[in-house]
Length: 103
Image 1 (cartoon, rainbow, N blue to C red):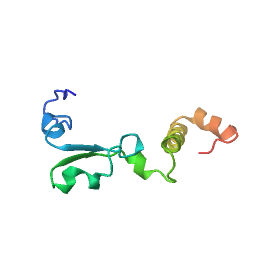
Image 2 (cartoon, rainbow, N blue to C red):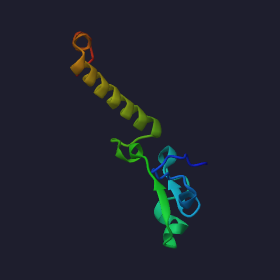
Image 3 (cartoon, helix red, strand yellow):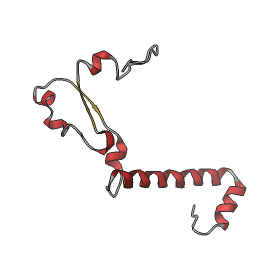
Image 4 (cartoon, rainbow, N blue to C red):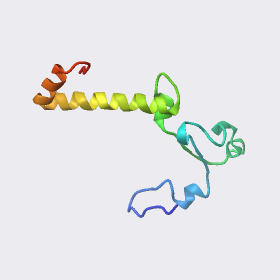
């Protein structure tokens, strides 16, 4: 992957990171290539680049990838509705009048 040219910005995709360091990630909700602490680079005390996504580790209760994303999306929708209702009176009245919509 070619790193974008952005003056003054360090890209994690620069060759010094992707070629010189072991790349470990939790993409898709799991460490596909094994637990990072079991990585050869860690055992050899070489540098690593560890990419983690908070959604995989901060959702409660922990469930499947789909359940975690659904839980996150529901909370985001709730926050958005609250923000809109706090700033748009007709929308707040609409939510107040609707069954099952709580602020």
